[in-house]
Length: 339
Image (tube, rainbow, N blue to C red; front, side):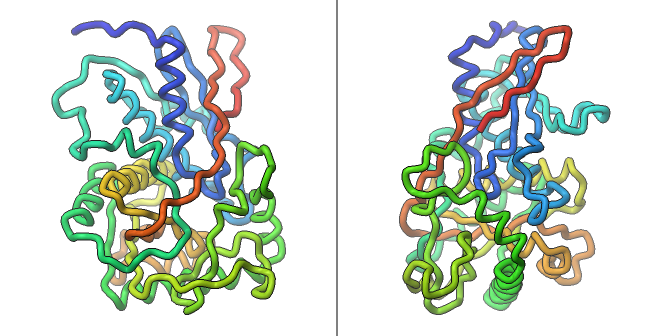
């Protein structure tokens, strides 16, 4: 087998730029990277200071976010001609080490993604919190999104009209709880950035969506402002297209796989010109999360709701440039937080 040359700085920078473009809850970017030049392994670690203790006490959403970053790393490695070998939770004695990505080569024929343009979609994918047109996404594209989730170890359920309404009602109930929970609203506000703020994390006010005038679409009220002070309401699409991302188990490894599946689905949609946004509210309350599971399916663990359709491009959100800390033999290096 041909031996790959060691990673150079430019290649490493390209990998990290792709990784940090992944979506994360409230744009917390809860990851750190550390590169071991001897083994050519890129370690992906959690960033404890970027957690949401109230909205995400088990760190499930954080793992989804990190899983999405790992998928981008994999995709970028393939684009650069490297074969990524990913180990999830590789060391039980290091719970903060969530993944180890070793880059080898050469690529095999089946290493290329089945959907063209996925790597290019990394830079174009943005959460769109604006109304969609209501034009239905063609079934072949929806089927391709479902196949992407399955290939990454998760499932994508496309509910019927009644099922969609049920999931929207649960999301609305969760949003109502969040609005009246003072500590949760305070936690959310800490991740909202004012215009002109030079912050590499969080969600700019300009990226937030308006409320739905018809109250069909339960958008998150990030600023937790009362109706008179919120942006003017607009009408969202009449028929909301939703997909439920779920897994058969609910362990830490399943959360990481679900994050990779999520990003695979989002990039597949983006490559076809489909916009997406994420509805996580119901997943933040154990009883409501359990209620989102498929009826009569005892091994369905809901991870996230994806709204998709045609509409305006989502606003860009800030990212901290990807950096790594080198890992010498001894003493252990101090990780560097990245975005």
